Length: 394
Image (cartoon, rainbow, N blue to C red; front, side, top):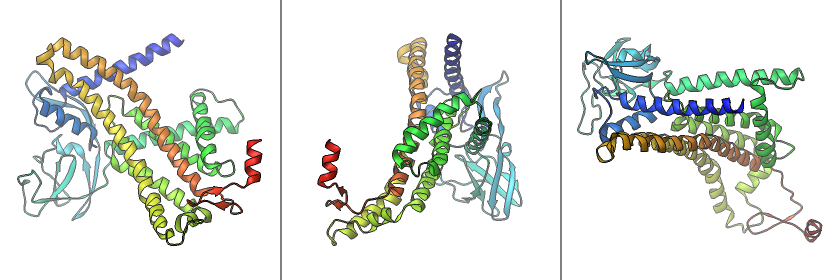
């Protein structure tokens, strides 16, 4: 049974790698390349397109025997707020154009898509005009509430987690030993509770925050793994998503902070009065800027960098085929991409763990209770008395 499981995992990794290479070789991100991606400029354009969000679900493209470019995928709903109000249509109206060539008329307004952003043309305009830097001069962005590929990934993962944990909760309520997929979830749930929530928040208050920590951990971890599949998801590599997760943590530890937390932040005890306002500014900046910024940037940067590295290694077969030969470049690309993909599987778990651990740490700092019977040193930390030192030493 173990050998079958190992073979299946190996097959999935090879399938992911080969499918990604196929998509790399045949994709047409800007609607301008009439064949395989081969030049360095086309490779760079594809990588940038791959890590961005998209209004349609594009699997791969190919050129048929008649020289026509065919795209395999399916459209997603476009929901925008224009100058004439709410407008909805399917993304297939753009015909996979991402350079502003196709104009869609809906709701008395004209729309186009440029670099994955939807623009509304000014009244009377029939085409998009660009300046020297290729910015539209007669169109402006609209409020976009579309179901993009990242939104679709979030909804799928949310529904999967709802089903999985609802099943696990029902098994616990019936006092049964978890079976099926619940046996996979249970050790991870216990790990987050005992190794992350309890040590950082404390025995008294860890329960009220464990639900959030479990949600964040599994949400990020599953989305990270989903990004390693050939379907092109890069949800946790979107800055808006990681920023939203960081804001959730910020709101929780801000509104959960007790009086000791705010007293130590706004008027640090045990330090000279003249220094306290300076420390208050530093502490406020750390709580409202540095902590959430570190959460969102770390997750965003690591996941995006992983995607870029994998895609760049796959591109070796195109960029080095002249110097190493087709066989040499392809072999080197396959080997390097395979091992980096294995590392990315570890990174997927590691980034979920780090985000959850830091969130628990920040929450624990906010709800920790301080003993004011002790003295404080120059930095506001508790100074144990002689009896405490003697008992700890013994």
